[in-house]
Amino acid sequence: MKGLIQAVEVSYLAHPTEDPDRIEERVKSCLGIQAAPSVTRLEGHYGYPILMVKYHLTGEEAHGVVRQVAEKMSPESKRNLREDSSENIDEHSALYLRFDKQQIMRGKLVLGQADSVRIRIKPRLFLVKGKIEEFYMGVLGLNG
Image (tube, rainbow, N blue to C red; front, top):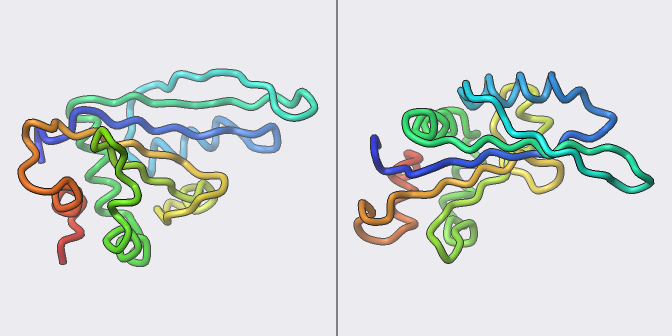
């Protein structure tokens, strides 16, 4: 897999009712992230502060996140991704995954839509041979 991934972006929102340090610790632990995030302060409904947390990873750290996703993704999530992979790929061949933040707090990677941790995987397109869906199935170990 080395060299196949150009970049990975991990992002999520931390709401006022959540402990941002605890979320950061769990996300970093679950995905094997060492880098510090960039944090943007947003204003929610009624002026409540919301933090947008983003990690932009390249090189070995990006590959490490993809490896963690491949290893820790729940069997049901793997099955769903296999069936609907093309729906998660944009026009630039980036794969978008959304994992339930509450499950990540428990150390599990389960696909979810609401209150999620978003992962965007961008491949090195010149290294992709064949269909992009097959590339991601191979990178994430979903071929079987």
